[in-house]
Length: 469
Image 1: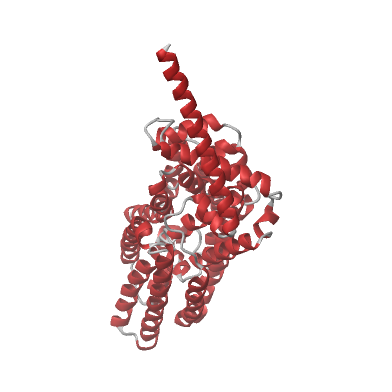
Image 2: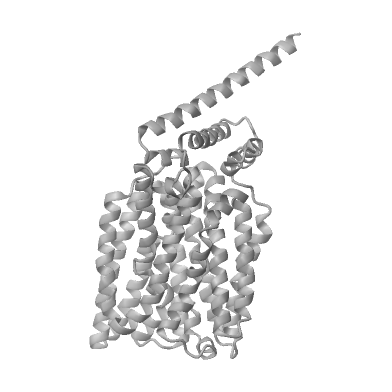
């Protein structure tokens, strides 16, 4: 949508949408997401992570076809609603599948790369539109609209070759299949590998613990204990911060900012947008690779502090240009936009998903992640409606609102974000519930492992006895 707003062909076809209409065109996707939230966690927990991803991808593929063939603004809006509806299913299940199947030392980098690769989609969208905007017909925006469906088609085709989450399999009583999955992906098929046995027993114990100790696993359970309240406070906050740190302006209304600083050529606008997506992707993937070296808390704090100072610099540059029309101020605003993107990419692109999945225990993971996505959608809807209107009326003064808000974010993250580096999913979840929960899970895992070892010793003795006979 950021790119399409720079296309004269798109604006002409839809009669130059007003500021409020632009807000609806951007926000309708997240309204579609909201409509699917009541169903997504039950589908993820009931039918499995893999099938839920395929379901979401199928809906989005259909919606991309509808958007590419849109004959009216209503049809375009309906297609974007469907995209958001399908996205909720895929976005609920995919990161949990990635996190729950990943090799333990790779779990955090891979899960953080999952969300960081949002910038790859942004890159494809930006450069596809840059390549098609010279087409003197509606295909200038229809081709990028159709290409939205390509990643979903790839997911549908390759999704059937993916493994199912071992944690989901254990929760459904399919323990043998879960063990085989762990062995195949973590130990070259060796069912007796110590790591595989430890992971398998840890998963079984954690799920058994949840079933026996946690009586209420409904939505109320998300707020029923002090530990869960801590989790939800952090999850809701980082979800909101991820969309309310100024990024909603650059992500959806960059063309309006560039127009305000007298950069009105569509070629230049699309070029800046395209280069920025490459820049953002680089920093998001770099941060993903460093997540286990630097830790979650240092990355969150350095990102928030960097966002704060680069946003102040953008505000000053914007104000200078608006009042004195200095070209240097316009150029500095663009430079600070890139520096802002660097700071944002250190944590809010790669970290928010992996941290949310890490701190939630299995029985709350799907529902808690739904709350996370629900909060993001609410923040986005509000942003997408208000940003174009506020920018149109306040221009650079609107940036001051974010300066104050981002300062609050820095303080909140400093006070509440806990370090979860080098902990398993179960250990991280137990961190919020106190030492007793940690001891019970760890003790039960140890018992399982000792029992497994004892069984192996008995089998070995029997085999030796047979050989002697």
